[in-house]
Length: 373
Image (cartoon, rainbow, N blue to C red; front, side, top):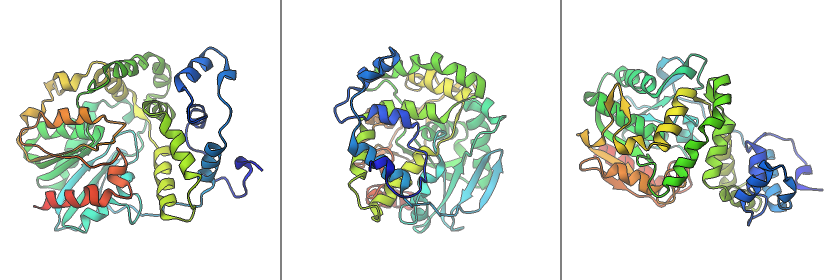
């Protein structure tokens, strides 16, 4: 009996896209670029033999019984697909959190023991999570200006008092722009794994990503958005070897352990992505990566350049040392542009920093202390 024939119901269709994960992680030593070229040339025979440990890990993930059961808190504001979720308590210091547009917001509230927002709520902070939701037909025509100068600023105004504003990943760039547009609404700024210099460390790689934009246009033109599976392909290509490593390791774990449940919860979240509105995708891929617009002072909001050096607000920039999504040099470039910014460098990756097994000690406790000091 093979791993694929193991008993138990199939609970998941991921990891998605499955074909790419299998191709990129066929063997530990696979040259994924050569494999990709062989497929493009119509020569699938060049793909290495299947990897039993990899297949066992993927099968174990697909059949794991875990199901996330956390109930989201009440919403205090809504517009279109977006909601502002209030984690309380009412007398806590308000912190409005802006997540990325390409992943579900609940990574910050993943499990009872792995929820950054519930930890902060228990330690003097009132987290307010801006859940962007799943973009409807009208929202697929939105630009970054529509989302920042429109929806984000209206969410900020709905709180009724100045807040600490935190942005995660691309949500951090949006937070910087919002803080510049309406400084009276922001009393503190937190930037978590936020890129700024998109050419830092690998200008050629950023340009290659931008060169893929014409290939993505037919799908975006039809759907009005960059599809979730296409986004997953782009993320996987940032570190293709990690796919095989994590699933081979999962094959060796005790499925009843807390570690296995956390792995499955994070993988479910990764596979539960949302499409990115086509105008936003074009700006991010073409202007951020292709032209490095933020670092060059060429990214504009309502016609005004977004300049971190113009901010006059206490700021904390968190740069995870093992981030493979946002190179640390890219995030450090942002910290260097904000006068007096404090920098925290947890020894974690992009996601592990906020939701991993060591996130509480590495980030949550320090963030709660900084916000309430």
